[in-house]
Image (cartoon, rainbow, N blue to C red; front, side, top):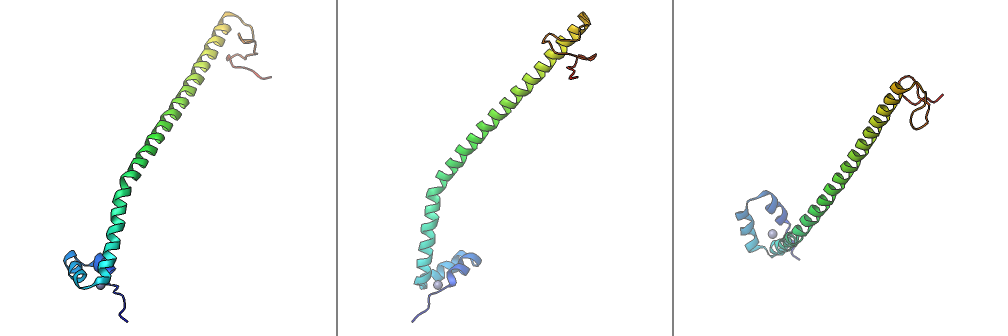
Length: 118
Ligand SMILES: [Zn+2]
């Protein structure tokens, strides 16, 4: 019984194309092996655009998620700082107008216009 030729992989990986072609002409085992490889690479070529499209789609989704997150975060920050400014300006205003130790929200404040908790 003739043993199956195992040269294909080493020829394919380590030798040049001409040498491989030469061997393929006289070796049916390697021809079969090469056909299998060709089928796989054809399959990969067929599948590749689909995967690229999927990747683009998920990248677009990631971008949208990032933009939404940044927008939300910026909105929260802006809201937080405008509220802070509002509170401190109103308390400063209150403080200069009156010597009352409560601000317009009825909360007790200290000399710095900050809410005091004691
Ligand atoms: Zn061979």
